Length: 98
Length: 393
Image (cartoon, rainbow over all chains, first blue to last red; front, side, top):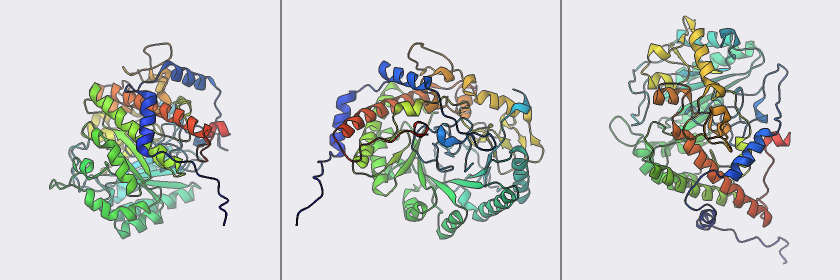
């Protein structure tokens, strides 16, 4: 019976991915001028801020990464707080459903 | 800052007990007392939260220690009272707990599930890395006992692992994360010990290890699976992570306070540890109320605009400046006030370690972005990047 699935591309293993990354980056890990320029451009773009019915900031609009906050399921971990609680990536650190 | 301009509280971090069954070498709570939070302290703490929060906001309670699971009945009592009070005020509640995982039995899991307590396990990697630091008072490592409880821990709501990275554990970082993944752990938050002395060689080694972690994360994603490692994303790129400058470095003193087992108030849980419960960093008590002048000082100090920047400051055109001008402030937060005050004596003056580590992480993220772009171009079905939340709206 014919297999209708398209052929799967051969996926690299961890070692191969690491070699590819090392080829790109070399040994020194620094933020180069091009990256900084891109970040500056991102800063310059207007932000979308969601407010709830009480005028309070809703964090989902401003959370920077996909990490699921263990508190609000929408944010990020505070990068330094070891209760991993209030979100460093949202302006007002609102937690929980709003 | 005027006391009247202070942001409302939305949560408390409650120290269920000062006691802990472990004696981790890097713990910032140096002197622990075998005391637990009293019924009166719980009531007064919730009174305070009720008074200091505003309409429409949910409440969050974080159960902290010592080790909170030493006293599950206190966790239950706090959770029950919080829910009852919140429901009378029309508010939602969320709970979280930081645990060492050694006592997470069936009853504890049932309790965590009953109140949807998001559970964060402190686990510093594989046995070698973990047992070098996280030991019982006898000196015996705690890794094996945690692994016995791992299935239960993993079934708790919002289960995640918090891995502390110290200079000594850096060489094991990638193998540690790899072994945690093999144990079925797919959500890992990392936290760097800023009190360590980091040399250039340590930073370089950290970068090498973090690149290996990136390779592991990419390998997972190429196979359509998700491995969430804090600071690495195969969904959102570096610009997204650095996009929005935050108003505050974190929630300490701004949206939450730490209540210790005696009822004393601090900006966050690190303060009583670093400063040995000194009245200098105390913000009042649940019995006498918040010292508003002192809280206002910490709220002001926690503003990103107040933070003075560190020697790792980075910007396309200027070489130094305050944190709110730094290109990576949104990802770094300007360190935490407690770390700052502990390291430099000034809550607004960060030590360079966290900013430097964050820059390395972001540099690796940039490499991940480039790699992922190539993968997408080559047509891997899992290689399509999602729009960042703000971009999607």
